[in-house]
Image 1 (cartoon, each protein chain N blue to C red):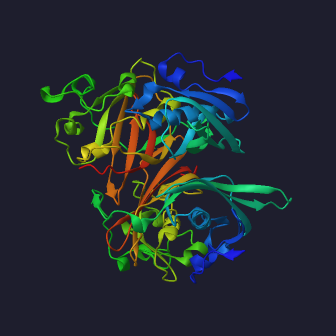
Image 2 (image 1 turned 180 degrees about the vertical axis):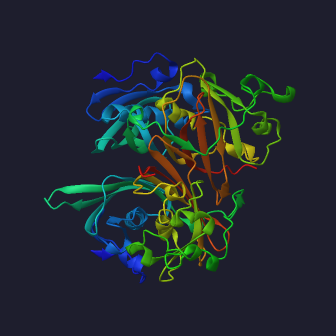
Image 3 (image 1 turned 120 degrees about the horizontal axis):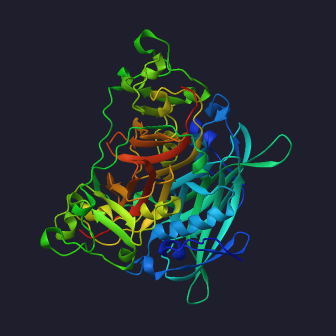
Length: 282
Length: 282
């Protein structure tokens, strides 16, 4: 039995996993990262990512895919990992998260397939045509404790909101006062509320922590993730992150959300895409 | 033992899998879908997708992720599938593809995690802001049997080229005559050479069948896929497909390739992203 993480932030404490045996970990899903009653998918992804980082010989998530099977609830959970392949520069593994239902049966919550490597070992070439999102300064953006145009604060504030420091671009927060842009975009500043700096694990949270782009399309309600894949491309520099999430294709009752995360050094540090069920509300 | 597919096209014959037992399939990786010596990753994905479509209760791939572990070679292969969860509208499974090395050991080639559903059962709402790529007419685009500006045909023609009918937008084929655009884009018309119409399985091939965007960035050489995720969003209408592939972030020795596939009815039928190792050549 070994405590895998020694970080002292809320994020590190709440994503801690305890190795009980090779490939088997215990965790406590914290009620502090819930939206209404559901545990946030990005928080769960970071927790799974931490277990895989312990199980695999390489430290950093390069590409992580999660399929969300059933809704996780706060409380105890068991993680099982399997090493698929160990290579020189990368290794691949799977992970599953299960919880025990009230009737004593084991229910799988999510399944993960991931390849890990060492971000510090990568070549330092950067040839990117992507540009960081143009955001107003942090203090001109809107958080859950500020009020756009004198109206109410960003709605949907639940436990997770206390742990995140998200400031939305006013151009993508009109939905909060009944005036969505209709473009399907969500942009803003992102940080952890207790000031913990970003790292590859916390980026797995960041890519699934913004309000749903569906809100900016004028839809309301639940947007459950079916599948999310995240590429971590660079170890983030300390300081605030900028996140831009875009939906291009709302069709057939599903939508994709593409997220890009930029660090304070203007590096594109994470790219993710998720497939989610579109809310029925209009 | 049951032949899972009865299609009579090259694609259907070459992606056929034979069920030997529940969750176990035999396949022959065809030399007809190779690039130089390597079996194309999209062809392999379609083959895995066919086995999962047999193993799972739902017919169509909604989200499929593959991690490519070692290079597959033409010849016999074994696929094993596992049903992770069966839901009412979707089901989730994993698949692995193994081959026997000359020394008799079993080598895993790729691991897949996927969720399946029924595309025919989806709501018919379409609210997409994405636009099909603007392509010159098919006859003004360049194939492996045509020659840009009187020069040689598109290079890299190998076995797979005989089975595909790809016509590249001249704007993204300058690399073939030593004048890459530098933008990291690849656009063109896509079909199967024998005229077989597209379906969800063949879309899994389509998203990984264009020349690498790295060529348009002025790089040459091998671009091995680490991971590829494909969302099938709609059953494609008969007729030619339009494919647009874009790279925004070439950094640290890796790049992403985002592919969008549009059908003849102007529907966005597939979205994919892959993480690949960037070629070292300049």
